[in-house]
Image (cartoon, rainbow over all chains, first blue to last red):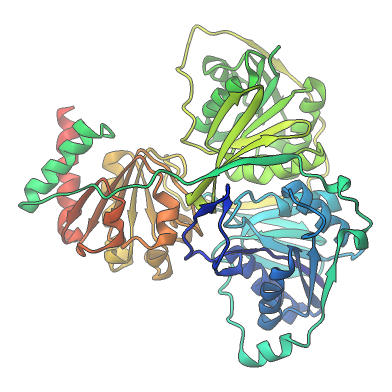
Length: 257
Length: 325
């Protein structure tokens, strides 16, 4: 089976966000594989181990993303592709990324594409479904279970806490929701092997794309931090009185109940 | 001048979701006096159209088909695209719900359009429609504009206030026939795991529990408190990982981001990943036995104490308030 995983390098969830020069400050920040994409990598490896084939992880970004691709290879993916847009594009959006990925995948005849259901940085969840549409294949988002039997696929989809069981066929794109699996940590032998696994680097030119072809349709004009929340009032006295005071504060002062 | 804006209405349990009315309010701002057309899809839904008008839609287009009884990206996108072609709107607004998140990228792709997802505020300045949206799960925000073509956005539930319902408003309701074909994904079974009524992302009150609840049994303590408040129950990752509750309740950087009027954190220490998912709530209450817990740094009101004592007392006290009201 020809399996692809769409992967994004994101800020570590532990990181505090600061802004300098109108942009999110990346200096000194730790980066990780987007947590939802980790589920996608894990699922891809499990599908390959059960059904055979090859797992290729693909990312669009800069040189720095090589580290996250190597991590995915160390987990067990077979090949990695970095589509490096650093020198070509200043402004990108999900339209841009999806078009680049779909162009790359256009002649690869994927059977199954997996991605995270959302990236924890921009949080749009657009790229997966957009890629599926551009490739003309069906997609199912936020899945928590995947079973493949020949061309037939049965998926469990999380819909705001409820579960839908959905039947469809390959080729297919799915996006991973938490609960799909428990991503493995790269083993030491895995890390050693990953160093020798193929990691191809491509640029827009290699995909016969011009900057104009993938020009973003939206633009960020400002980035700002929410007003800092300061610590409020910790109540004191007998517990019964505290509870009464809390209800009174919520009712009369905050007016939320 | 003004812009013509198409707004997708959304149903849950055969009722219009509140986010549909909020989307109409957002559309009104984007329209700048132009026409707001609401789009209603389903098997037999025409009777609901008038309510959309009462919340501000100028007109409603209804597409009814048995293949639209359940959501599918193929079915719903065909219906939306057919109506877009006929109406030729300059802007489109969906709710940023499970359905909206799933459908909007496909529709945007088909229309070769950009898409600004998860919008919490809309303003018009200097001829530009400017959208505010959270990034890094609410650790920061960005303002975005559409630079090319159609304006297409999804709005986060609970952030843009709906307009006041006006039962005297009238508007045209028209039906459009669309041939829905080739559904490639078929829903075989739906298992309801959430309680009736209040959806976590749309709830005005969220009662969330952490590891402090100690067990799945203990976690049930929150149900009654949430019920008295008409709210929904959420959880920290710790509580989900420990198996006290389902992952669908998880609030945080992985999980849901919520912005209710009232957030009550029970036995939650307040890891940075959890704070990302709830710190933009309007009023935050923390109940925790550890006075040093991080959660108190962002809470408006805090009670330091044993939650197994505090929560039942709080539930009782709220019941009294309800009786007296």
